[in-house]
Amino acid sequence: MIWDTKFTPMLANRIENQAKREEEKLENVAHHLIHKTSVACKLLEQFKKLASLNNVHEKQITTVSGNEFLLQSDIDFIILDWFHAIKNAIDRLPRDPSCPSRNLELFKMQRSSSTELLSHYDSDVKDQKPEHRKSLMFRLHHSASDTSDKNRVKSRLKKFITRRPSLKTLQEKGLIKDQIFGSHLHTVCERENSTVPWFVKQCIEAVEKRGLDADGIYRVSGNLATIQKLRFIVNQEEKLNLDDSQWEDIHVVTGALKMFFRELPEPLFPYSFFEPFVEAIKKPDNNTRIETIKSLVQKLPPPNRDTMKALFGHLTKIVAKASKNLMSTQSLGIVFGPTLLRAENETGNMAVHMVYQNQIAELMLSEYSKIFDSEED
Image (cartoon, rainbow, N blue to C red; front, side, top):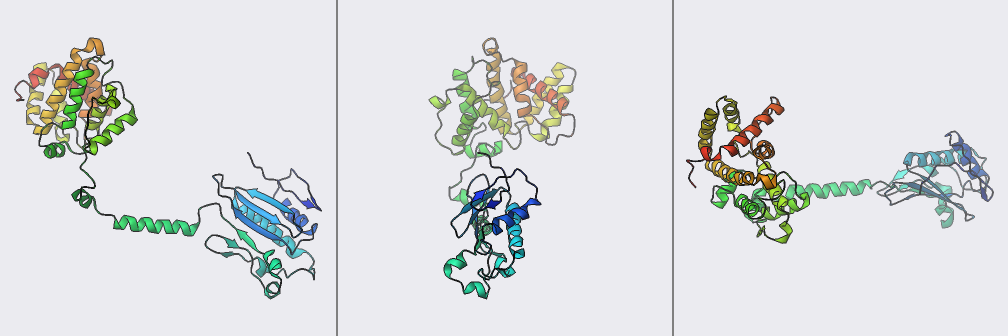
């Protein structure tokens, strides 16, 4: 339904539609509305709140003869313009002894918590019968949220936030558990008393069990909602069985594993090692590159080094099945390079950095046995 604004004067018991919308017609309309129906001082005007998503302001005019008229606008000040025009027209009409006083105090606006009362009674009005006084009352309901309600909600939210216990307190009480996703690698490993996160091992095992032949493994994205569900379960330390039917899509498992590495506060290749690895890959001699990178890997913290070894050892098995899964060393380098290796502050050419990131990941894969041959299991 589409509402349109029309100015319609009421003549006798008929309403005649006019196509003219000029604001200067407003006062004449109000004059006709009041004068022609002889209800100048017997007008009951109520501004009602329309509780809808359209934010429409309604004005219902009821005369003492029982006629009712509904005016609508989605802009509240237009409704107020109507009120002032009608009020001004009433004030200019000749005084009728049979009508109550039209003193300005009658139309003074007074704000309350949820309405705006547009009537103050003078002594003459107070002497009228209750039904007459009622016919002179104006109420305005705003379709927007009530100001006092908003303040009350803000006050309650403020109290809730200030009284909220600290994260440390919630963790001590066991209400909030330590997260797996988004935590530092060394923190996760210390908590698990291991150098390779349990979740990484679980994902690698699942992929090697039923995903080595999957087309586009690690390149194809899984369903994000399902990945987030898996992430939630892992963070809540709930029992996880990746053989469950809900994790049947192997791309969900690989997507979650990539998300784990992507959300590490510090990447698998620590920030302090970024430039040394880039300088190593720039070396022209291949043997020199391999030896330099091997030396850097041995200097890594145990969680980084062992997790790196487990991951790239797994990826070499993916490459071995490239004829079926179509994932070459270069393809995996493109997928994992920017995820595992990035600068703390990108100040240079990001495109150039991405090339180096991919090349480092590719070299780690293609020369895996040489780089990790002296590493102990």
